[in-house]
Length: 231
Ligand code: CA
Image (cartoon, rainbow, N blue to C red; front, side, top):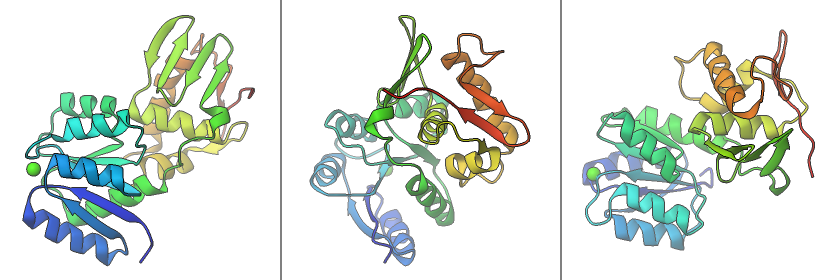
């Protein structure tokens, strides 16, 4: 037992059985619910570390379950399972508050790796840094958005993860490898270039002059550093 509890909301008995066994073998305690309404009630009534949520469910669908959970203040990480590999589904799911996706069919090993990666991620940032200012720009991590002098710009999933991690380690130089391990974890195919691409995207949102960043700086030979005043 590793003490961590997972709720699986999934209607395929075969998957519940094989994935449940696999996760239990890794030391997780696993509960399951076979439709959306039961899943929602179980999730709200329990103290889970992670929710695995199928998109296509009888009764309330996965998107609605996800939205309801977030609207009711549940912040448990959600890994969404989808049979569709459509970008629009992923974007919608992210907007509704899912943390990651896995497209069916997948190998049980991959599910375990994703679960572990999500559970390794930094927890909800300290209240003091949920909102902070970078000059004229205000960042709201909880709402996943940036206020650029009145223009509200949403932060996409990995941009938000990256910004949360750097904010939690503010004023420290964080290496690309650490960012890869902590934020992309499971995805062996990503390279340090992935980090750079996301930093460029993030700078366009949080810096007034992305080409000459004041807050999210490059630390040569190391990685990146985010600096800001708290309070
Ligand atoms: Ca299903």
